[in-house]
Image (cartoon, rainbow, N blue to C red; front, side):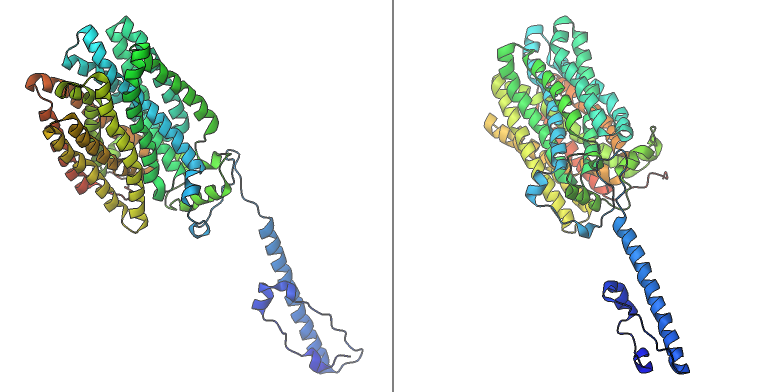
Length: 528
């Protein structure tokens, strides 16, 4: 029989203990005697009241705990993986092996292959223009016009292509672009045999289609890679771009010797069609829609996204088809991108288009050697570009601001080639000249970690159209540089003076970038 003293014993568990581990609490029933005094009855009633309160709290915890365990991640109909928020501390940094075997690296590898085909299709004419000029009696200036015909189409497509990329995503637009420029490449030999206008039209169509390549690259990297990995992702993608130059310049003379002038055009065109088939069937526009991505990788990508930036999938749905061009052009960071892209394209296309002819004219090397001397620097650019990306990412991870990192990278990417071109002018042998050219092109790859990544940072929702706008300005500069080099050589009789002018422009563009660029997000909702 329980005494009143036993009934009034204090509880052994505090409320905190009850909620931490309710399974340890057992409410024992109390058997009351038939006759108790009044004080005992009061104690008993109060104890029963406490017991009911504890049981009520225990029941509430079990309901809350059960509902928490039964709660499932929400899965949308469009996504192959659950879209759930994760905290950055929950996902560890991937190892190097995990990084290079990840699904996002597979995606950027496919992008790099597309850019390799893009540049290989461009540079075939840089080699083919030599036998074409000899067989048709073209002058140096007209050869520059033929080479620049690619840029006529490239001038008009980047803005429209970038807008389409922001609206429809990089996967669809990239597939359409590669298919179209592969067709133009494949039909170029046929056009060259029929008429000059047909040839110029095919080269212009090639430019129209290739204008979407870099905006698509930017879009896919922004969706698949966190900010701390975007520099190396751009480095990987642009490595393919530069290797495309090396492949095109090296293989074109060999293919021409075996299959005539049209040989490389046919091979590279068919390769593009094959790429489209793989791209459409094996890649996804976002990590959430990828059936191959692992749960860990999806969590890692989601955890690293900035909370201030909405998911890229929702961005594409809310992005207007007509972007605010006036507000975009009202900001000085936009103009720093435009100036940087213009100078980058000027130097790129001048070197790409004229170096085979430069080595043939200045150092009297034959066609195969000229192509080889020109291909070596682009291989170096592909190699240096990736390590420049890793270096840039490490600077940001170590605590350096994004703005300062972009300024350092862009300064190396412009001032380095500026000094190296001066050394190229003074070179006395083709080997020394190739060494200076290799240094110029290799250091030029640091620009990919400057303005090319900066497009995603100042306006992620408008990165495609910003890339298109800056690319259009860069294409106009490339046309002026490519055609102007031919006329300059005819008027002055020397390549060296034009290279010296290019060096001066590099230094000027670096100064403008360091004054007006930023790595922070720019508010384009209000005009200044």
